[in-house]
Image (cartoon, rainbow, N blue to C red; front, side):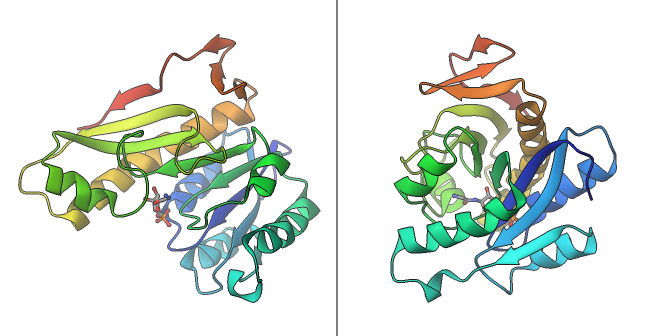
Length: 217
Ligand code: GAR
């Protein structure tokens, strides 16, 4: 799959439903993204099968084979750079990135996190939202910096939490939202409309005072 757009590597560790949303959106046409490569740190990740089914190149390096985080990250970057990616999309890539890696791709890494950041960084966000009895939950697309889940926020998808929702059900609803918002934000970058400068997010040459929030039913 290649449309001479913005060369993009998608990094995954698991199921890859977000990856699938990019594949589907690309197949529909009209995306400025060129899905050049899908990379996984886990060979069993189902997302690799999704990529192969869509005729996208894949690569896998297992982190267990390296002594340090940075050694692994340098090996990953050497592999990714064979495809000369202009954008890295983290889609359920469950690795903390070294400062070296973040610097190597400065301003060119996007992540999606299943919470309305800055609330609920880290893991088990759906359980924590339910425990806290929050009225709203959702997901955030942000630029990646050295601070875990702390980079400048671009776009949030927000839902109202129903009182009876269990974590699995909530996760499924949040993922539906992710599948809508992530390709949109990544495509803004691919179109040259979105950038990160000095910690600020610029969209169409305007500095965002905060993330754009889109409500979902
Ligand atoms: C997504 O919900 C994503 O937000 C989350 O992992 C899931 C991956 O699902 N990412 C993180 O928690 C990163 N902190 P997928 O493999 O089906 O796309």
